[in-house]
Image 1 (cartoon, one colour):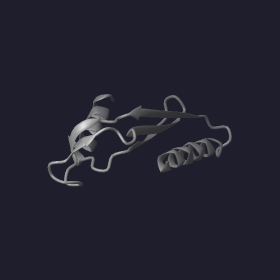
Image 2 (cartoon, rainbow, N blue to C red):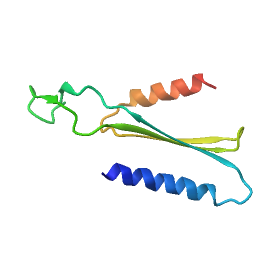
Image 3 (cartoon, one colour):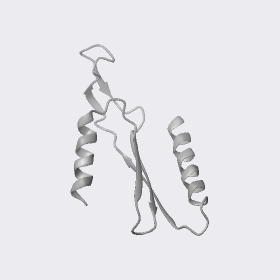
Image 4 (cartoon, helix red, strand yellow):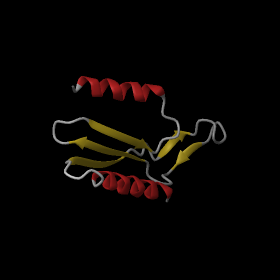
Length: 103
């Protein structure tokens, strides 16, 4: 699976980044969540015959998050990757609104 290779590439990159600056403390967080939708009876949005629905899960869809913080009170960088080919701008807008409400 290609997604596992990307996952480990990012993990190794973050680990390497944390060791670049001597004497600095970085906090690193990783997370993964199964975001697989319904297993059957989902319309395929034009990728098959219009009347054809799905039946089963070929592989699970995941959301992965990588967070690097400069110490406990310092700035943070979050990178989130979704196994989703057609996420709308509405998803991005809603995520940003929820993040702003937490400040």
